[in-house]
Length: 385
Length: 165
Image 1 (tube, rainbow over the protein chains, first blue to last red):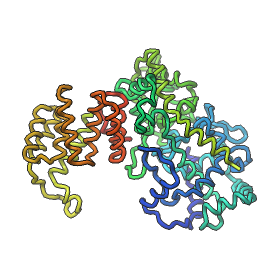
Image 2: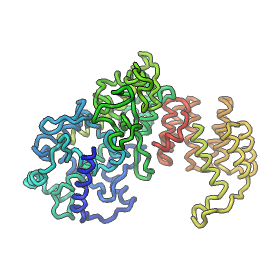
Image 3: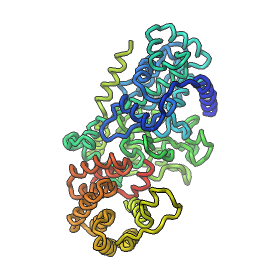
Image 4: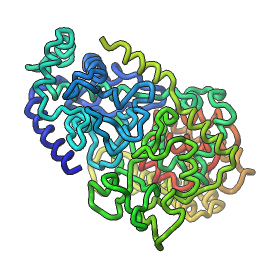
């Protein structure tokens, strides 16, 4: 990840140079919020996401970002787009245990859902310092170990491809009217970030029950499942927390929360809690033994669509995920050493579930699927010229 | 829940000890003590409540309200102290939450605690109405209330979680 960090820093420098003339008029919080409200369709009861002062939301940028998101010309060899790993019908995941980049390069971790990514306080599975989408997007574009979209060293080639498209040039011009030149990597990234900030899901049956004053939105099993999910006994909601059912979030007016990562007892390679390289979680960023195997709790919104599960896709189904948590994790089950899981989150204490309760909990998790969101995402994909 | 109350009560105590005007003006790093009637009884009640002595705390809040019937925070805390003494007090507790909100329509804590009480009384729709109002007043308290409504329980230690959320 050191490589990735360097890569991000280098690319960020490039962007700083390229992004001197941002053409911004009013970056006050109130104006950013107003602009955001015009572009977003934030569901009732949901807060407005944070928008960086240097990348205010505009319809034009979102539209450009949408087109680029589905455009394979953005990859080095023209073979993959952002949507290859973030497919709308799978809530912007890819159904794979490990993501696949250009030339079938396999990424060590699973592609994360982009559902409500605008609210995430940190991005990626385990990076505590990655907080802006504009920075995160650099990773799939520029990563070389392994290559994901393979942009490194082929920037001019890619930009030339985009510039040759007269219609796309017009969209760039509308999105960044003040910039010269307009078709730049920096603008590609800023437009993608703007588009991704619009991927807000908040119309699941659970939302209609919790926010929509519709007591019948959850059926009996789903309602009982919600009771279990939010119960003190299971405490699922302590990590998958708040309205986003996720790790820490940020939004307009909120304080920046402390980053939180959890070891869920997936591995204990050496009998003392080690996770297999390179997926050591927060540890690979901090080097601290105590951070071994700690990963961010992703949102559970649309979770029924995002199998397989965990950072490495090592659990195939929601049923097996529940079995994992009910057992208190799989790495501590048959201890070979005195303390096989020293970094395991204290909440991984295990619990008992009857078959009926398990079915109800699954029903609740399925009630977090927002078909409107998926339908709209598919429509967005279809509208790509 | 106990911790969240502690934090919220601490906020109220600070407001009552030192007075809102001085803070709002930002003119003094050490504002004058709040001398409004009922404040000392209220603060005593908070201390008792933090120790879990709800019966005595309720008496202090009642004394505060005798001196200052318009103290919304005292109604809110009286509602909590009554509720913690058992379901036989739920109706009285509810009337004090209602009064607190009548007096101070933006008192987020009162919506949260009334929402919890509604949930415990089985009035899920009323609890969700309070949740809806709370999403506009205090997002993190709204999330805490949402967990309480969904579970039908009074979760432990929600203050830390609400802050983390």
